[in-house]
Length: 284
Image (cartoon, rainbow, N blue to C red; front, side, top):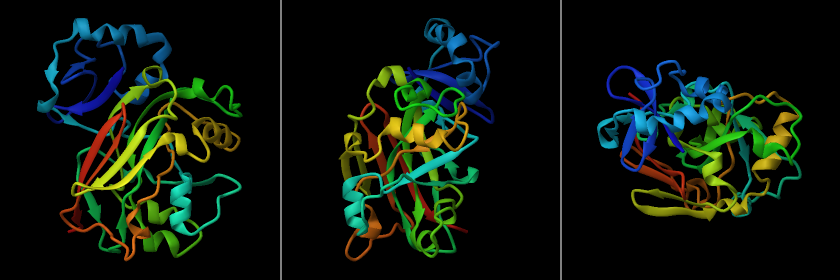
């Protein structure tokens, strides 16, 4: 099932996407939560009802609504670094012995087709196309064997990075956390529809030029490893999102480096999950 947060005016809604139409949930089932995290939190009790929406609701053409970030206010945004072999090689670093984690701040969350800001503070803005994992239930000390039970679904993300801010210290938080630098979407595909997430083609292009072309089977630490590792530290909760790593082909690794500039359009696409496409523009 594909679930989306969207607007057709000033109010955000959630709905079920079927091909080129979206079926709003609230008009058909007003007793259900009207936001994605609320829906995820009680999914086991309401999944069957949500599946009935396509027979109860009046569909809307998808082209007539604005798709928003599926999770607009996640409790946590966690992201792993150096998690594809070719990206490790192009970075000139050794394969990490342990998982390398950082956070992105809440104001990085951005819509799948919204503009991304090139900040006044730097011109070294880069793209990182990634598969994003959305947590579906509360858990701590989750075993690798049980990790799949805690995934609600997946979407596409771009871990936009400001490279000089990222590398000026050993802590990557600020370089990864400029406003608008975490577009996700275009919708949330539930885990049951994907099955094994380690088989999905991933591509990123800039102005139509293919820059990244890989597959999630090349993750160094796979999805289950990531969830098990993180849950040793923090309680994972419904709606938490995890950026699972980017493959080789980022702009900073090119010779010479090719950073994003005003007017550039970055498209990140993952097999079975859809695509996001964001225009980059200078901060006013």
